[in-house]
Image (cartoon, rainbow, N blue to C red):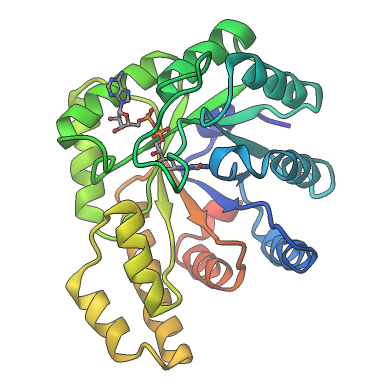
Length: 297
Ligand SMILES: Cc1cc2nc3c(=O)[nH]c(=O)nc-3n(C[C@H](O)[C@H](O)[C@H](O)COP(=O)(O)OP(=O)(O)OC[C@H]3O[C@@H](n4cnc5c(N)ncnc54)[C@H](O)[C@@H]3O)c2cc1C
């Protein structure tokens, strides 16, 4: 299977999906169904998240291998520093290597729910940049390494400029490409992308997109990520919050327009946060492929 950085070198934009490892048998069947529905769209890669504090580690491993071996898709395993020593991280990476996993999304992770701040393990990593340096020192170029970035700044950073200074360290430590936190306002993304270029950060930046399919998600997303949701979208969704069909229509129209604008502005890739649901992502991407038919070839 291919390294994502090599895919990005020969093909832009890329289209990719993110899944989380389900906890129940029912969730597993639903994820299988979603993958099968999305398979004909031929994603360039698929990524599997790593649950808070490593809670899903074995499930992440299981799914990332299954997606690669059974569905023959390039897959990427997320990995966080939370609750792990260097030794443990090394073991996880060796396991990935032995199963021919070639892509790692290297993250710090969020503090556990009962803690306000992230505290590294005694022999662990404080920042994602330290994890990335470790991967490069121990495994050289065995993996293509992705890292997270935040067009509206990471919630803990004082300013966007300060966050970008830290991002530069992360890229210089060996990150090959970046995937953004979800966002709904493209102007914020374009402004951020320009700032990265000014700061000499030149790795590909893939846009993270999440279609909102329920009104109650708005509050959750803004709390979680502090991203801005345009008033117009918020008001429309409020008005139709109990009308599932209309809500989906509004959400799809918005996401299609947002992606279309990104593609017209030479985005390096679009990564869909699917929440393990196939419907919205399938409809959005199918529509985009009609507008930009060349991308499916
Ligand atoms: C695409 C994507 C995928 C994700 N997948 C997962 C997942 O699978 N599992 C999961 O638990 N979480 C995931 N997250 C969430 C992520 O773990 C959190 O956002 C976390 O709070 C920060 O992770 P990071 O890797 O960006 O951290 P870092 O890059 O380490 O940054 C964290 C904070 O520290 C600051 N900082 C960084 N370096 C320095 C430095 N040298 N000096 C001082 N300050 C510094 C940064 O400005 C930032 O405020 C994902 C996020 C994104 C955008």
